[in-house]
Image (tube, rainbow over all chains, first blue to last red; front, top):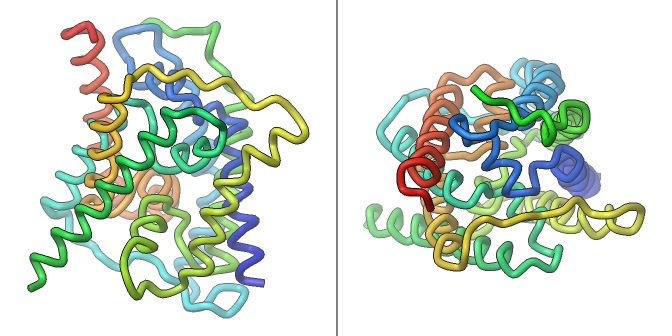
Length: 139
Length: 144
C-alpha cells in the first residue's frame, strides 16, 4: 500500500506539472524574466499547490504517524545557516540559466528531448559531487 | 511591468498547482514523507538510505507521467533556450545547490511554505531572487 500511494503521488505530481505548463523551460524562464514579457503563470501554480497542500501538511505537523502508520518524517532543522542560503542562491542561478528544476527534469526525462537527458545527467553529477564532498568533510 | 497576456495560462496553471498540492498531500498523509524531488533523488544516490522503495516509486510515477499522459492527449510543447554547455552548467548548479540548500521548488517552495517552515521561506526567497537576477543579467545585460 505504501508503495502504491508513493507511486500515485509521483504520478499525480507529474500530471500537475504537465497541466500547469511548468515542464516547459521557456514558460518558467518567462516567469523569471521580470524585465521582459512577464508570464505570471508560475505564481498561480504555487498558489494552487500551496493552497491545497497547506491542509494535509498542517494535519501532518500535528501527527506522529501517517494514516498508513509510518512515522512522520518532517524536517526538524531550524537554523538559517550559510549552507541553506548559499545552496538556494546557487540553485536559483542554475534554474535561471535553463528554466529547469528537479521535478520537471524528471517529468520530461522520457519525452525524447536530448536537452532533458543532458540536464538531468549534469544535475545527478552535481548531487554526487555534494555527496562526495560531504563524505570527505566527515572523515 | 509588462504582462504577457497571450502566454499567461491562469486556469490550467492553477489547476496543475492543485494537482501538485494534492500529490504532496497524499505523500505526506499516507507515507509521512515530504514530496521534495531533489531530496528524494539525493537520498537515492547515498548508500544506506531508508525507504528506498517508496522514494524510488514516487520518482517512477513522476518519470512515467508523460508517457501515460501521452496515451490520452498531446503532451504540452517543450521549448529549451539553452545549448549543451548551458544545460550542463545549469544542471550542475541545480544539483549542488539543491543538496546544499536541502531542497528545491517542490520541497521548499510547495511543501516547506505549506508547513510554514522559516527555513523554506528563506530558501524560496533566495532561489527566486537569484533566478530573477540570473535571467535579468543573462537576457537583458549580457544579451545571451
